[in-house]
Image (cartoon, rainbow, N blue to C red):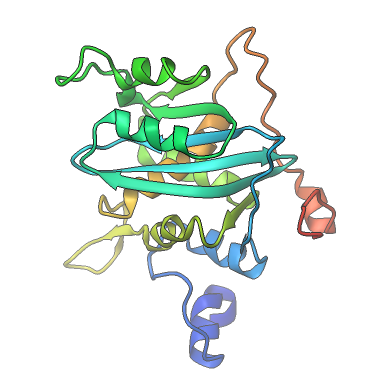
Length: 239
């Protein structure tokens, strides 16, 4: 029935609820689950834990960044930032002005490219300021990154105020739709929402990256599904 096929539609039609996600949204199920489990909430910064930053780079397009802390089996999204039309020093200053102790700055593959306006790549500039900088290789197919994002979504908690813009982008990140048939395509749209979504998917991609030798970086734990089903967890929300 409709309730089994689409809980959003069922609650919208029969329960009078607002739809939390758009039709064709890439992360529709994941966003609905996060709403149901109250994972859009207040997520405080833990000063004893490092903050990792995941970027999707852009100058003419939007440049987006998620600020996360890994605590136990949880990825806590404590902050979000996006801007357009700035040189890279703007984003380095933005990070330095925030009161966080940083772990790893994760950049996309194009960060290694030399820039026409500078003799240093974004990676080189970032390493002059931060000690741990990693570059995630380009994926052969977009669905690889999408599945990586889905794989970690159930472990993610978002600060509903500081991450409000990023959450909205995830909500509106959609698949292409064929104008003639109305059928959903296999590729997500590239629009104003895709940059924040791409930055989010970096979290899942980073889990698949091997640690550098001698880095001292901890293993990234994957949530035990049996713990989740049994209602046993490490959540600071008392879940």
